[in-house]
Length: 383
Length: 234
Picture 1 (cartoon, each protein chain N blue to C red):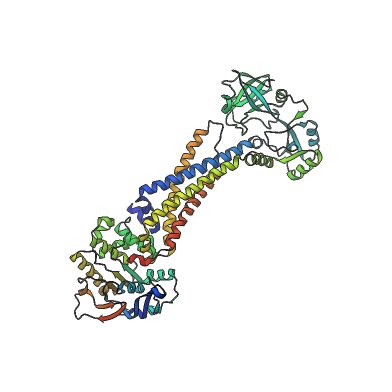
Picture 2: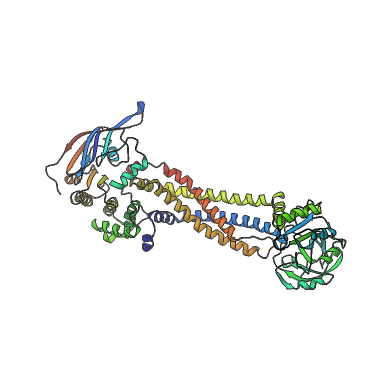
């Protein structure tokens, strides 16, 4: 430590030694930060995971604009559009291509009996807009067969499917599993069942001239907003969305209007508060124990900022170690949830947000100690 | 010898109104560099208050204090007082007030750190100060591993960090045995004479008296005697 002590500043050395010489209290601080990070990380990760899930279908297409039945609030629940709308859309300047996408709830009868609700997704095989991604078994080309469907491995057990080629019933029509994806989750817990558009119409009793969505691809250089407005004006009683706006609307609908997002945010906030309280309490106890030392520093002529630096560095050390431990726990939770229908997302941006929250939490926890040290009387060293 | 500290008609009063208590009254005093001044008096006579005023830890209620010829403003702020202490004054306390989690050299290095001595020089300077006080072989020990005398010498080394022109010591030998106490008093005396530091020592300890170049007696907050013993043990 001698060599290390030579390299660090006096405030860093005091901060580290103050913490490390009272290991029990340091451990309590770290556990507090760790659980706060775990709680915030998991809740915010779930929130982001849910958000991604709710807009997954939209995010995995390359469409510039989505035409939806009027009043549509999310991608999972929608009415019907007439096929002629597609032709009307194609006549609007700037539009290069318009694809149909089906989305409709259906009943899935398992091989061994029992029924589950599923969301049928019917896409245009030629262009692939709305096609499943992360295919791990089978082939999308096999969907050309009349009864072929693809499901996700996460829901295979729920749907009673154990192998490719297994047959089930969808809305009392025979269906055969020809492929598995991995990691395509659904927020509604009605698993997505992918098939081509014609099959989806058949399974869900849509007429051949009916669909759910129209996905618009624009010509290179076309103005997205101008074309959106032109489509809206041309088509009348439909909603025309930019893809990103429709994805955001789907996220808003499920996370805000259902209260699911609020619950997750509240739990994350609770983690933050718990962390502030624990860090605040333990740092304050350490500070009170060492008040004579702070008074000595002050008597020696140390400016207030020197004393604050010692306390803030104690908070920073707690934040760094607690954050590392907390993120390790979050990573373990993510590993455990990888095979479940609930996703904990942890992109670099969220890690950054968590790091900032942890730093802020520890800094706030240090404020009480700083307030105490602000009032310190250097003459107390003579008592 | 240069005058480093001048107190003119200084008084310190604690409390207000009916509960007011005058700890110091009408103190007129010059402290010079290169000598060791003893501050004697019974408990409650105002020794510590006077030390605090001299050390820029306590504002005088009345009168004026000059440090190196510069008068301290009556409304000088706490940060400005701290800056003055940092620049000019070192303290030695009765109970050492070392940082228990730091080794001897680190205790001295922290004082250098506050004075913004470059980090690369802190260890070297701290070790040199400890060596001057005969503690070269104890530099890597924690305070709990040192004797009382060694702790006090570490405290003196810390007080000397950054070469202050004034060293104020509050009962520096009170917690030490006879021989060790004498050794600490001798070290303080040597600092005054060899390095020109103005050393002021508050003490009840008769072992310290032979080392004083000047002796001030306080009673009831007043300076009742200011004498220079005819012989010093220096």
